[in-house]
Amino acid sequence: MRKSRGNVDPAFDARPARDRDEARNLVLSTMSKPANSAPLTAHEAAEALRWWREAGVDLALDETPHDRFAESAAPPARHAPSPLAAPAPRAAEPPKPSPALTATPDEAQRSARESAAAAQTLDELRAALQRFQGCGLKATATQLVFADGAPDARIMLVGEAPGADEDRIGRPFVGRAGQLLDRMLASIGLDRTKVYIANVVPWRPPGNRTPTPQETAICLPFVRRQIALVAPRLIVCLGGSATQTLLGVKEGITRTRGVWREYAGDEGAPIPTLPMFHPAYLLRQPAAKRQAWADLRKLNRAVEEMGGVG
Ligand code: URA
Figure (spheres, rainbow, N blue to C red):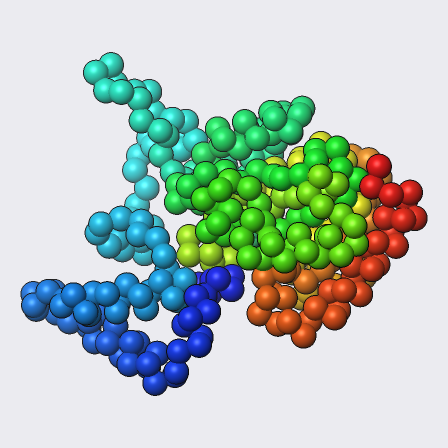
């Protein structure tokens, strides 16, 4: 299980450590019950579900467990069809949606590069993402979270990946972190009609975990194309993940924030890019808002220098 990106129920942290330990011990004891022992009581089942949800596991993928280690150790099937090609439906069966990710990461990345490059408009890029079958996150997400804001904006903000609220509504940064982002923008006279907002990964990772490097690499050609099509004059990377992915830096956000760098696209001049703390981090660490405010002022100065938002 991976750490979730900060959407842990605040009630969980607020509960006394003794309660949390009791819940954890109860869950551990139910997990180690032999398969043929008595079913969980309603209390045990409710506690187990609550414990998993608070740990960030809030999505059931299947009714039965799978041993993925054993599956990946098995020899590959001979003459396997190309995993990106959806199987032709049999005459009597209604067509099913093509299966979730079965391509190799290399195939998925190649396919992502090709379909992103072919998109000549943002609408075409959105449609290409809707068709794309190379990222497994699509199978667990409710919907694609493509973008919000003005497609001709001079400022583009890029976050990491949608969370639960974004996944439900279909727009980036609409949850608590998004509301803080709106207030941050408003503090320097901006709003969603004056900026364009997207994420590096456009599907919600289950339980709000951090996208894996592989998922990020597969989605990267799409967000790079999105940047090329919006052609912003300034980019703001929200958080370490977007910063590392778009700028190719290794340092964490504490070191990179507040310093202008350049994003190198595939075409055109490099774009000045400012890494900032992610608003979800600021919700957890309000003391860091001071630095965020300094960064917002830097952004505001750059906006003034380029003659406003257009
Ligand atoms: N966090 C992100 O990085 N993006 C969103 O859209 C929401 C939360």
